[in-house]
Amino acid sequence: MLFGGGLGVLASLPLLRRETVWITGSYDSNLNKSAGRTDYINAFAPEAESHLVFWEPLSNQVITLALPFVSHSVVQSPTEKSLGLAISRWGRSAAWLDLKNKVLRKIIRSPDGFRFFGHGVFALNGRMAFITGNSDDQKEGVIFGFEPGSNRPSLILSSGGIFPHEIAFDQTQKSLVTANLYQHTFLKTPGSISIVNPTSNEVLKSYPVAHATHFLTKSSGWLVGGKNQKTQILSFQEIFSRSQAISDLKIALIGDPSARGEVLSFIQNREWTLVTTANYQKLLAISRASVLKIDLPSAACGVAMVNQKIYVNSWNQEGTIYAVDLQRIGKDLVPQALARPQINGSHLHMIQTT
Image 1 (cartoon, rainbow, N blue to C red):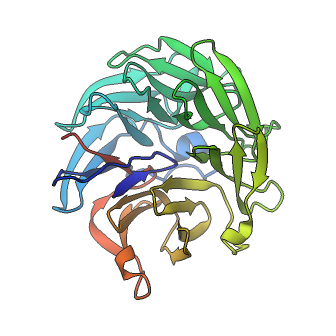
Image 2: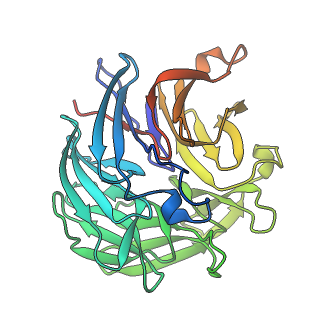
């Protein structure tokens, strides 16, 4: 069993035969070299040159692809497995990728007055890819709809909030779900999880969530990672789409008042839910039987899992990958630093092209 993503991208694929599984993420040598973290556009250096890294954990093969921007996440077409989309956050660039041959197909630029916000999703039929974005002038969250291979959006939808981050389709595969956050002092509106009809460009419903960043789609609704506005303590909310009611999950799930900051990665498979957050140097591995709190050397932006091995990447200039072997539960769960590859400041994603 395997899964990966970050900041909420889920992949669950049966390993019926030996198939090559790649983990991909970006390495930015300029990370945090510029202005302080409050200068987000410069700190994330979205227009700086970077490398997209493809890593095959079993053979330790590493392939790098130079990009003229920093990729925050990569999404793969569900119908054309070789087609991928790399997306910048706070930047004006994205790129169509040939995932099989690990080459760049085409650079996409955001429309004038807009910038991309790091996440995307393909429609189940593969005919449209949606990317989160924000308008510079109106300070309004948007969703761009691109036909595969195109460099101009054929749709610009409302995200139902400001600065949308995570995006996915709902359980019906007919409506888009976005996590709209606010983390800037000049924004007074609350964050939300919003449901958007891409056909009518109608916001069907918005659920208020403080600093919504990432979510997991469940059969009954969505499990959302956020933080308390006053205490900044990490919290989870379960939104039930049928009853349209919000129920706070107990923070006792974590049992640690030092768990502060927004969720950076939030993924699950049938057995485990994995969570990493800003300002909290722990990996949370949650199952029905236990909650594991695994100390990390630094905050981790991305997390992925192949079988029983978890991989997290450091959100610092070194970009060290750490491995945690869950088969050692009850023995030694100390993360092991890997010599290669280097991935920082982006999510980790699982891709298979065979």
